[in-house]
Image 1 (cartoon, helix red, strand yellow):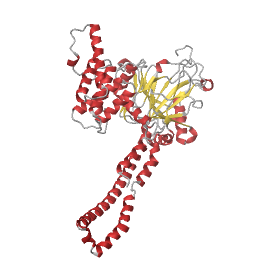
Image 2 (image 1 turned 45 degrees about the vertical axis):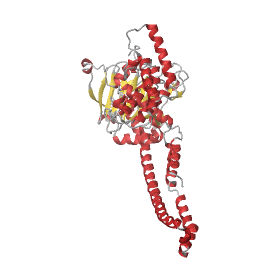
Image 3 (image 1 turned 120 degrees about the vertical axis):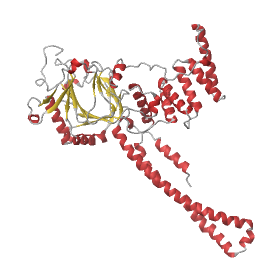
Image 4 (image 1 turned 90 degrees about the vertical axis):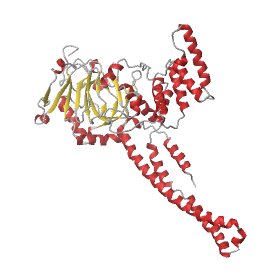
Length: 535
């Protein structure tokens, strides 16, 4: 009989099959996995029921035969002296044991294995798990969430009560460690240690947590604490493979440092208290990181009362466009300079659902153009999936394209296709320009640069996911059915560098947007050049 452990091994092997799906980058596609998992659970329950039924039959046989063999083995010859007993023994061994063998060899797992085999090609792979873990760390940094609150599931806007176990925290820390990200390795390994010390049960040994934590702390430059943690590890596991040699090495380094700096007032390493969450986050490649993330949290917004007094709302008929004349758009100023406006009721719920329906099967990892090579590639600073929709595909897409042209007064004949994007776990697009700054970009030869951006918000977002402009401190929050519009170029054709913007990581919720990048060609009489560079 195929054992349950063998089946579990098979299932785990199925789960480990790799794909290039990058599932974690799109909440929309991840929702399919919820229903897949529900189907697999139902299949598993049916397998368990069949297995229990089979096991009950086998137990009944075993009980009956156990009583019989106890009687027969106590006096074999006397037992067989009765011809009926002799006959039944022959019958049992010739027929009934064969039937029992067939029963045992029946495999109720066939249906379950077949089901999971069909679905496993769509399962997340190791890269998805790693990407999701790194996304949680990104959210932790951007929204300044401490590991303990994160572990307990205390997120703003969260509707579900969920938490991270010791093993979850350990795996998070190990992912960071393997990425040579010792800052986050410390945060998550020490959270795992907190929960273990609080009495929470775990599969991972406490010694493993201390091993990773002590070395990560050492890499962060905190020798006294690395020594304290390593001593704790040695006392717990004197025969640990690395702890003893690490401790001697750390102590030697600390002694050298103390002798060089002559810190006679500093307490011995053994008396150093263990300090948690005391390390600064390392700086990275993004110069406006602090400003950008502050805006994502709603901090540092440069909206003054004077500026607010210059913002208005109005009816917008597209310069007496026939399609807007009797039903003008509601237009709100979001920012005065550069001018950013929001249009209310830009998309209906039915239009949004249709666009999502068309785009969802075609979502693929969003790419960026490598500034050195000009080749499209994926990047960690853009985490989402997108699809490009042509107007001819569906009347709804054609209607949306026409509406964009009516509202903006710009032709969309030279614009790019409607791009639909869905952001996954911690989905984001770090500060970037929509217009090209490469003077010899081949994409500019035909239709010119990206003159303007029209962005539809197709969902509300429970927390996070704002569009921010670090240069002038503006924050625009997603509101389902609305759209925002701004120009990327001055009338002279020069790029407006103030329009560098970002899509903040989605903390809680699913963010769907669609955008239209409108190009220069065809706009010569719709948006004439100005007399000066800054017009």
